Amino acid sequence: MVKVGILGASGYAGAELVRLLVQREDVEIIFVHSNNYAEIPFSKRYPHLKEVFDSEFSAMNFENNEYFDQVDVLFCALPHAKSQIAVKSALEKGLKVIDLSADFRLKDAEVYEEWYQTKHQVSEALAQAVYGIPEINREAIKDTNLLANPGCYPTSIILGLYPLLKEGYTTNETIISDSKSGISGAGRGLKDGNLFTQATETIQPYAVGSHRHTPEIEEQLSSISGEKTSLMFVPHLAPMQRGILSTIYIKNERNLSEDQLLALYNQYYEEEKFVRVLEKGETPTTKAVSGSNYCDIGLAVDTQSNMIVIMSVIDNLIKGASGQAIQNMNLMLGLDETTGLTQAPIWP
Image (cartoon, rainbow, N blue to C red):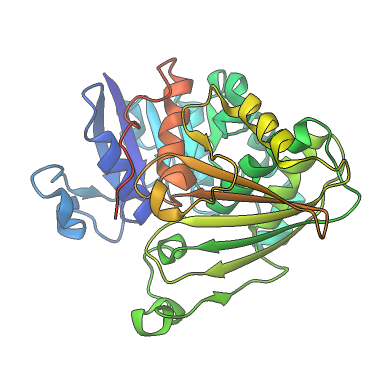
């Protein structure tokens, strides 16, 4: 029996961790943390889990925490800069740690501090963190105790570009990603722009040229391609509960046909359980992956502009957060990585 604890369990990602893990017979959730909701039953905040998971939230101090002695795996679903001390303490106790924040995704502490405007308190741990996209870093994930779970936008973009960049189809021009996210991607905190009356029946770009996922994506793309890779990333808030759609544009410098492009992507992803390459002429929809750990990828070539168009969709809370975190946990523990993640998507 794998014993797990979840920090920041009151947010959407934490709640999805609970929903997915509580259904497993090989996992026991020892504690769910929230200082704001301490001693309140989890199902009071998330009533869909009434009589499924009614344990109370626990408040805690992260340094030398006795709760950590009770678990094998610690999930950190806290905002950036909030989990660093907890991660350090858990690693010192020999736990396997999966951090869903941005705190361990970037290898350079100075880059992190520039983009997140806060001092990194345990920068010495950055070198040991493994970036957790299983389809790319599977073997390294198996051997690590510190897993940096990717962001939702980065997951959709990196999986979309991986086969091309890995095969050396690099470009001298900046890659463009036009990405759209459901409102749950902004978290559960009350924000004026996320109110129903302001977010419904409209779509809006935000953080243009300044989104904090940009250095994370560029670092990973550069690592894959073996050279500096630049990305123009424009995120948008879409009037839907959940989902990510990234439409990515890259110059077709080798004049690949759609058939060649499809053959390449099928070669890379044919053995991957959670990546589905669509057939020629098909385009993905966020609805087709909702509630699942799938990433659907559609491909096209615009011969008029000589551009490759890659369309990548995920559920931002599952493959973009909690589902991928559990997939990573499975690998870290030597389990079948699909365990607990085979639920079919929800439709409609």
